[in-house]
Image 1 (tube, rainbow, N blue to C red):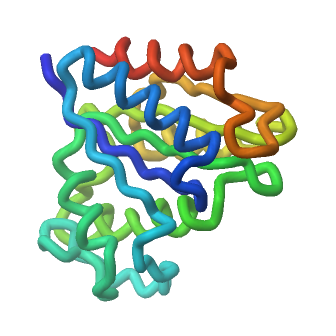
Image 2 (image 1 turned 90 degrees about the vertical axis):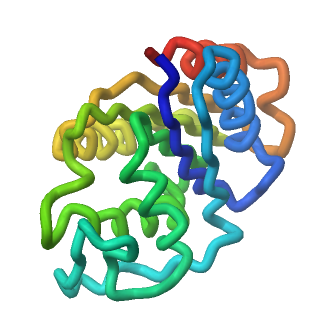
Length: 183
């Protein structure tokens, strides 16, 4: 069965190591017949959450703020799988990705929770110079538990400081296989 996959790519570098993981994952997912939509967050205008509790999940534009999240909301609502992709910054996801994740709250509010559950799954792709992924994994596990998303797994690639350091490493193949394994 073909699945709709949304990738929120929080890397600031379009051709960086995280983006290499995303590319490989996408190739694997598409080879299995899935549809993949990637949002490269660095190039999008997304403001931080105001915490106003003014969202209305059933509206096409659920948040009171009108910015590029309006491109992401419908894709996430229709998705079967949401992939979070980011470099590791201070033991967490990048600000670009955290901001988008915070703003997804608008589709949990108001007229019905259209984010939590719904048979949705998630995966995590990360590249880092170091290898201290414990804290971000704790956050990711809590997030998927709260959202009632099935955790499909993660690919964590340490030791990648410069662009291209990840090329030829086993994590590239792991990302491909994770994408291909989605059912």
